[in-house]
Length: 238
Image (cartoon, rainbow, N blue to C red):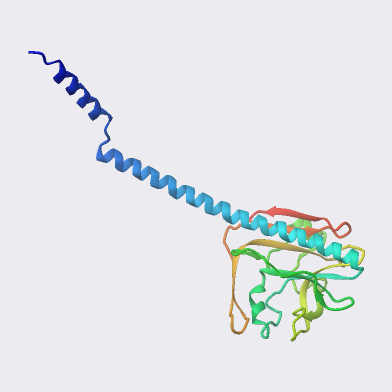
């Protein structure tokens, strides 16, 4: 009797059995894929946050350079205004969410006016109001622009600009003189710190409710060279 077909079919069956996966093997593969997916999602979230922070730095650097050009072209002082919690915005609740997360260009030379629209930092990116410059920069007179104990960081101007209810307020600013140089004093030069965090404001009263810097978040310092107006960005340790 010829058993060749049976032997051939039996051999194929054994080969198929060797190529199949057991339930345990499938569960292991699924577990590994899940771990890889979790790691990938976490990595992309980190990239997204870093991208938003760097985009904010690029836009702020461009705006500071633009402010300097406006000052030279119009031959007048140009302010880059950074709203903080000491600014009264109770009658301008639409600007309540600008605290520590927005800035604008304005001038008060011939008339009070904004030179462009409000610039808003991406969600999750804020100005660091408490960080101090590295020791080497402190020795050169560099101070956080939000340090209101330093008179060079402050100017009294009509604010909010181009609002029907504007009043003279002392606001936090970086100023450029008509010659394009940064407005400084002998012992202080303002620098700006940008990091990750959150700001919560009461939408009804415009009062600051909470200000939090994310622990371990990357931090960057922007400094404007007083004579040339060149903006330098330095990454700092958390």
